[in-house]
Image (cartoon, rainbow, N blue to C red):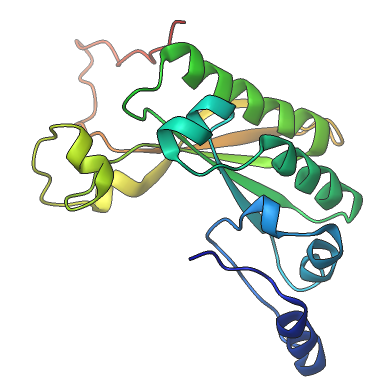
Length: 193
């Protein structure tokens, strides 16, 4: 059941002078340009969910059946409306290759470079009772709090301002104690295709 920003809803918000925040990503294919421009005047940040930057993963692994060209259309419209846009991605799905993970990261970076879209990349987290959990054996996790704390994966300059910006990643490793002076800090892994 998708939240669709309908004309009657926007009419009511505008008549009442109501501001909105939609933290979960909207479906790009259900967000016409006219509605996006109207919504942009009422939110701090627009948000859409691409799930992946690779069409096969969106269609066959996630089962969303969203044409990624619609995400690019929304990103262009948001840029033209001077509206900040966050695009949500998930990496690490069962059945997703390392090359496809890298493809998603490249797509996210491209949206940032071309349209100024803010990428939010989360790791696929198989929560108990979800279809994803049924696909992979996962250890029982008692405390999901740390599983949803953001950390920075990478940085690059904003094409408009030259200011370095963060790529947000949600990570689920257990917090580690600080490295002792005799212990080398952990290395950041790079996914190889």
